[in-house]
Length: 303
Image 1: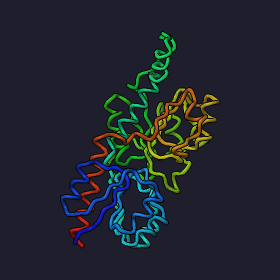
Image 2: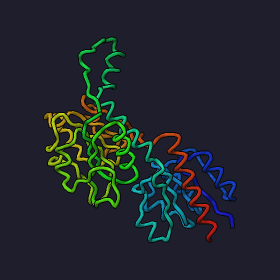
Image 3: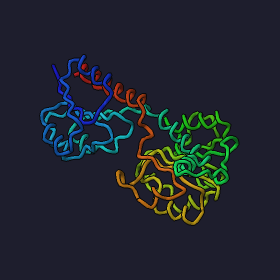
């Protein structure tokens, strides 16, 4: 039996070809708007998306033939899972596909904060030579606090240890195997760390986990990095902490109000901001697409 696939967001060409070679009828319109997807989806068995397309209950309801939703990425918070489950629709994602990319971006933000690279570059582009303003710090021997010891957190911990950093881990449960020091007290981790890097999913338990009390425990010389999800860090509390000198700076790739984050936070002189690109590498996108294609093909072989 031939199944039809609607690819709503661009995926790697290798993944698309895998589906075609497996006998799927593949349609890939150029980044359709949600209302266009709702009109198209009644004719398709499978929907493939990335982070751009939010799979709402209305979209799922319109998919009368829909059997599978494939998310070519890690998180499924952009999909109405409850509605999919109620309809008996399988949801596939690609855990671990972007771990290396996100981890490298987090480390990159740490380097950028430690050496004030964006500010130094902007100064040079303005025709200035302000060498004395940009005395930075090394990462070696600094303490990194990692929140979350999943796929990304483990890679970050390994990379940081390779740079000579002391790594402390906090997670909601103690990992069965760990190569760093695990801390049960998150407040103590925040007070000891020179850098905090967030690698938790956004759930009811983690929403606004990092707020005034934890930020207030940080050293005035410390930095916060978030490449996980917006809404884990309370952005107003972070802005207040930056304005009052409670911490030295922040590197942020994710925001609560995407794609229109808080201007005062993004524009803060001690914030380095990027537009949710930590997972956006050729390698990660190919891995994610291939993983989704493999799962869809495997699903079809069992029908």
